[in-house]
Image (cartoon, rainbow, N blue to C red; front, side, top):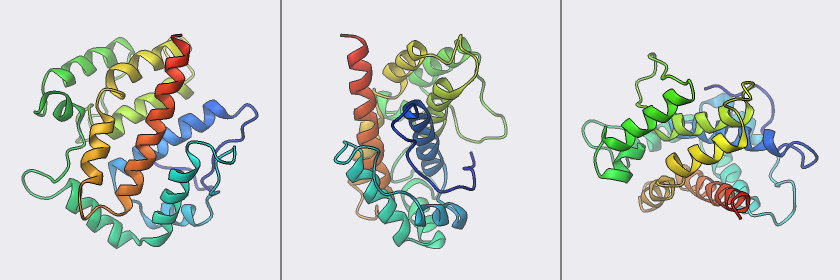
Amino acid sequence: MSQPETALRFASADGGEELARAELYGLLAQLWLAPPDDALLQQFKVAVTQAPEGGGHLEAPWQALVAAMRATQPGAAAEEYAALFGGIGKPEVFLYGSFYLSGFLNEKPLADLRTDLDRLGLTRDPARGETEDHIAYVFETMRYLIAGDDVAVCNLEQQRRFFRSHVQTWVAALCDAVQAQPRADVWRAVAEMTRQFVAVETQGFDLLET
């Protein structure tokens, strides 16, 4: 999941809201999948630090994320990522929805997710070692449902259903787990940006259902 070699930014408010949502899902997926490399950190050095609307709900967490990325180096970010999510045996923080929904890995929530992905015509890339309930995979799926070309699949109703079942149900618990870790620095900011973005998405889907 690579980012284009352009400055990170929010899309403009005039017609770019869906693009902005897709881009943010993609960026967060990348940050949860692996530590940022030098190229991505360079993008953050020129990233716009204001949301489209001053005082918007995502403005403060976005500014904090940009600040955290500007303050770190690739080696330090890699060490933090490994300390939180890697290592031999049980990591400090799991990145898989099944763990937060059932208490175990590779349980029924993963099977349910695979059923829904199959219904959407999506399959796991065999080159990737992570299971489909990894937060990066789930966020990439949301990005596709927003920005993909297949209108039979990539539409607001499919976004709503997938988000309700496979994002809203557990991502806040992951963010809690990260922010409870003393070693979390960069990913404390990633977690807060994720938490607030999911909250905004939740409110948006709530409005659709009223």
